[in-house]
Image (cartoon, protein in one colour):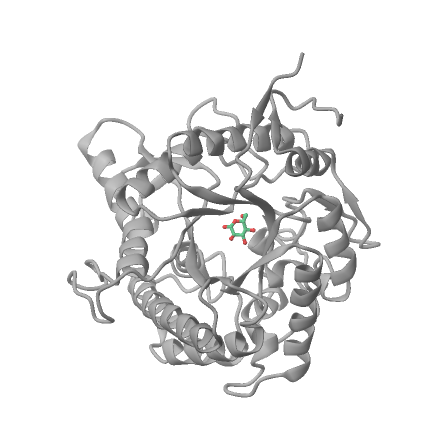
Amino acid sequence: MNKYWQLPQDLLLGTATASLQIEGGDRNNNWYRFCEEGRIKDGTHCIIAADHWNRVEEDIALMKEMHQDTYRMSLEWSRIEQEAGVFNEEALEHYHDELSKLVAAGIRPCVTLHHFSHPLWLENAGGWIDQRVVASFVRYTAKVIQVFGGLVSDWVTINEPSVYLYEGYIEVNAPPAKSNIVSYMKGARNMIAAHIEAYKTIHQIRQSMGYTDTRVGVANHIRVFDPISTDIRDRMASGILDHVFHRIFLEGMIKGNFLFPIGLGGYPYGQGTFCDFLGINYYSRDRVAFTWNPANAFGKLTVEQGAPTSEMGWEIYPEGLYLVCARLYAKYPMPIFITENGICDATDEKRSQFLIDHLKQVIRLREEGISVERYYHWSLIDNFEWAEGLSRRFGLIHVDYETLQRTIRPSGRLYAQICKDRLVPGEAEFVSK
Ligand code: BGC
């Protein structure tokens, strides 16, 4: 007999995507240029992706079929503000239409303002490394809230600031691909400042519109960093990594506290709480080793020996979801949105069990009084996985990139059933009742 775990009724379940990864059609952004430079590992390109721009209705119908309560999506800044200070009415209308359709379908949107991609004019002016980005981001934010403030109450300002900077300035797997640790720190400072200013702007504008339900946060990429041994050097490397990859962003964006090395522990934008929820993107754990190699400035990351992994080579470690949420909640007791959690699995052999095992951790968190309010699975559909290209598949829905036809995978059917019944089965071989 199958055993089931009950999900709390007030936990909203959904999926997440990002504009550049699914929409296709935009040439005005940093990732288009990166693709044109031939930098994508499997030789694919973001110019069509899943063609979501032309298939909004079809994709919303699929979400509805999958009983989604909520959907996390992002807006493409490079479409909305094609030139600095010049807003594109057509793009604004398109997104207004998409958001209205979601709301009409009973799917609550949670909207991200910056998810790794941005206009070329911004990139050419130094991107997130140049301090002027703060004012530019606030101008874009203000416009977006004026136009969509009536449709959307839940906002993510920036997706994974640490990953954006790590990939662009340390690992050089993403634009601008210029290795420079000083740039990483400058970018961190600007992203934190931009978040705080945008947080204030979103609240002010929606308040002036008469809304009192505004919630603003950041989608933080949080990993479990475990030292590879008990050696003091490995423990130090792990601690430093935790500091520069997690702590400076969390303290900065939640509390306004600019920790060393991006500040000296001061509050240049005022002291307060600048997040209404704790956004956590959780995927995996790393074993961290100390190394003298300057190419591994952030420590050497390895995978636990013999551990199950995804097609990305990332350890599958569901317990980590519990650990990161419990640890952060102890420090920042505010509602948690799991803004991303998912697996690269083209054959769909592991995704169902992955889902079950992670949702069980959500139930465990709730049973311990930790207020997880949302779970967004990454991703709704297969999409452009950044420097890895289209061949890496994270979707609950399969996309045939020749025909662009969508097919819900078995794991997608399972998730749909879970969203409908709010029951998590004991094992992956779940048959719909
Ligand atoms: C990002 C997504 C990405 C996913 C899988 C997250 O780091 O926010 O854009 O596709 O992980 O790698």
